[in-house]
Length: 121
Length: 186
Ligand SMILES: Nc1nc2c(ncn2[C@@H]2O[C@H](COP(=O)(O)OP(=O)(O)O)[C@@H](O)[C@H]2O)c(=O)[nH]1
Ligand SMILES: [Mg+2]
Image (cartoon, rainbow over all chains, first blue to last red; front, side, top):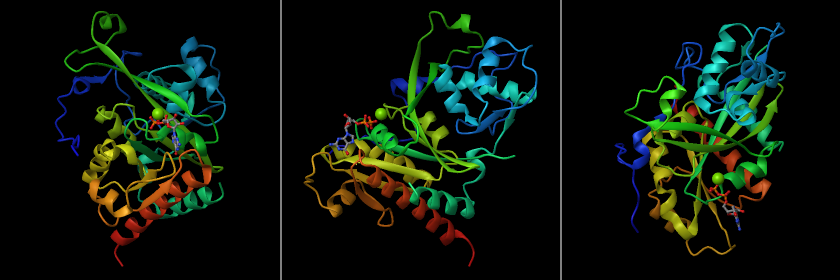
């Protein structure tokens, strides 16, 4: 049996590709590097009338807590772009941000509640 | 007001049942999100610069399970081609761990996933999908072929079956907890 083992040095066709970052409000990468695709955000009760329609659409989607990945999926936006736009909205006070996944990995108490939640399924 | 996200990665070769497993336990039909990729050498800072440049997209499926009023578990399937390693890095970062689905007809297609999580010390369990009920291999043979550490749990599963997928998830979380407790000072 031959195995396709990854040697850490990806020279395959896909290895030449990186996420496309698009300039959004003068920014090409999220300012808040803890914002990951599972991080949830929620609309804050502020007036959105001055926002551009693309941004308003995000805020409206977040009437309940919503992850960056869900926003991207529902609004058909690529992940990198969704992240930058969400970041702009958080910075400008339109969205509140929850605790991202990567901060909790060592939390046994949290894993306990995840286990209990799964057992209820 | 807080809201905590928890991630689990569902990995394995193409057609091993990743999307099926996510669908069987998710409270919403699996969603798909896309990343647009561009050639590494090109410094793109404007959509107009993309014209004529080589781009490709990579899609990920995911589902969600509400654990409690303030905790949501997201299940992310790895992209179809397991060559997009940087996407795996993003998915694996901060994840509880991974379920590696194994199709007994093509054991080798899940080897890169096993190798990926093993090298990074990320907790994972293997879930052997018995597509047609029968399986030509014993657990020992599968462990041998995948070079599994004896401590890595192996469960038999049918990704279409909710209780079966649930068992794989529960086994993973228990395994991750056991590793955490083992590492903590007594
Ligand atoms: N018999 C059987 N078929 C399955 C099982 N899991 C997935 N399938 C089927 O196998 C095909 C590929 O599954 P999919 O979830 O799309 O694989 P993915 O590429 O890993 O996401 C689909 O047609 C599924 O219906 C299983 O446990 N048993
Ligand atoms: Mg799939």
